[in-house]
Amino acid sequence: MKRSVAAIVVAAGRGVRAGGSLPKQYRQVAGEPVIRSSLALLAWHGDVTAVLPVIHPDDGARFQEASRGLKLMPPVFGGATRQASVRAGLEALSKGAPDIVLVHDAARPFCSATLVSHAITACSATGAAIPALEVTDTIKTVGDDGLVSGTLDRSRLRSVQTPQAFAFEALLDAHRRAIASGREDFTDDAALAEWAGMKVSVFEGEAGNVKLTTEDDFARAEAKRIASLADLRTGSGYDVHAFGDGDHVMLGGVRIPHERGLTGHSDADVALHAAVDAILGALADGDIGKHFSPNDPRWRGASSDQFLKFAAERVRKRGGRIAHLDITIICEAPRIGPHRDAMRQKIAEIAEISVDRVAVKATTTEKLGFTGRGEGIAAMATATVRLAWSW
Image 1 (cartoon, rainbow, N blue to C red):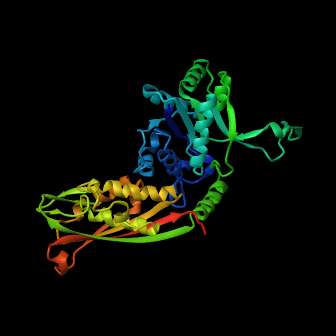
Image 2: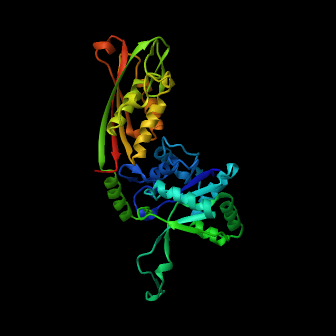
Image 3: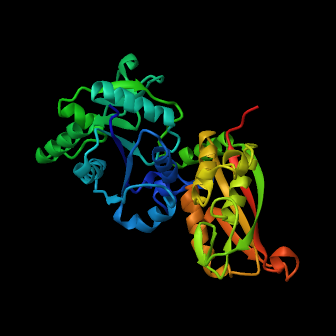
């Protein structure tokens, strides 16, 4: 029987050592907030059923913008320490308690889906598991006088990462016991679990799963992210649908009242269809007709949301990201302007990207051609996609 898995993303800290005017989890790396990478990894992971962000009370607006379009639980507010923040997340999950809980630092944006899977597997076997790396540097202890007081045996040392994975009920009980005992000084959940008597296993971490702490970390992360998504692709899409009977049109996932409807494939949303073809074009992965044949009765009248979601998922499965979607709708009527922002929001939600990566424009053909005669609506789209470079 498959075990339920929830993830807590700890993002309530201030990150003062990283410098800058923003908490480090909201600073951008290659055009994307650090926290979004951590949230998206878990939200898109097939074995994680719920993702709970724990944020600072002052960061509500920042969080909403950084997480737009991702399927997450409503955030809860953290406490003055990391331990208090994790406990707040555990208590929030306790009503529908999962079997396993992952605890991940928002400031580790380079964790892989494979590492998440390994954490779940290891925890299923032992009840508590953490990713760790062997220490390669020589580690010395230093006294108050500034002199070396000893050299540690590095063969037994490990540097610990997140996500850390635990049997949910056991970790929640350990946190409650710790606070009842006046212990509020644990810097990670493994240390708290050890104090509570849990046996914690170790599995191999990832060298790239670094925690961003200093300004130098951010500089290296910027270079790494740009290098990792160096394959910049552009695709274009175009779609046309004729007017027919009806009282509304679907455009950009938004229902717009109109004296006529559109006929054709699925719900005839020309804007989404053009966007889907643009994304698939950037991937060199056929077109909407290849994946969703207009002759297949399953798609008759279907919502085009699922086509855009499918295309966005194709990008993610190749380790890539949609950097931008630019859509132009061509028609004399209905008026697009009043619905533009709603379309942008809806498209961003479906594709699971931030709204500032979606542009929707409209134009007419000055009464020329089939759109000018009011016979139908056309749309053009351009998709910019970043993929990991491969030859």
